[in-house]
Amino acid sequence: MSNSIINDQIMKEVLTSAKTIAMVGVSFNKQEEKTSAIRRRPSIIVMKYLQEFGYKVIPVNPFSKDKVMFGEKVVGNLEEIKIPIDIVNVFRPSKETPEIAKQSIKIGAKVIWLQLGIKNDQTTKISELANKVCISNRCIKQEYQKLFLKVNPVFPLLHTD
Image 1 (cartoon, rainbow, N blue to C red):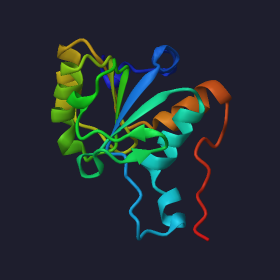
Image 2: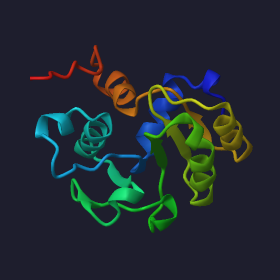
Image 3: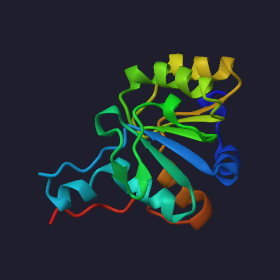
Image 4: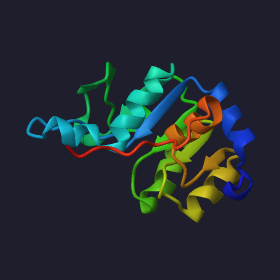
């Protein structure tokens, strides 16, 4: 389904039916990083937020494989996940997303969701040819807040102090 026809109703259906999300590119806390810097990482904020609203979120990051993040073991790639995945949420550069879309299709994910600022026409085509929903350039957390909590602004400013 083309991103141009993705509307609030489709996103609401996607978020209502989904139970499990693979989050590709979620950043793991580095030992030497200050806690304040870690809390401002969008992928960490989004992962924790989605967990708080009942989603099982599997972190995917080859550089943090086998570590534990918010109670979930980090896997190196999508194919290592042994449970059904509803949404593959992507925090990686746009140029990497066609390959992630192919992997998402291979594991049977229903939706490929590219975070805010991430868009790739080839990824959309790959998804459409496999009859998968592809949502681009939208934050899954912001959309959840807007659709279910009626929160506005949806992503509060993060303080740097």
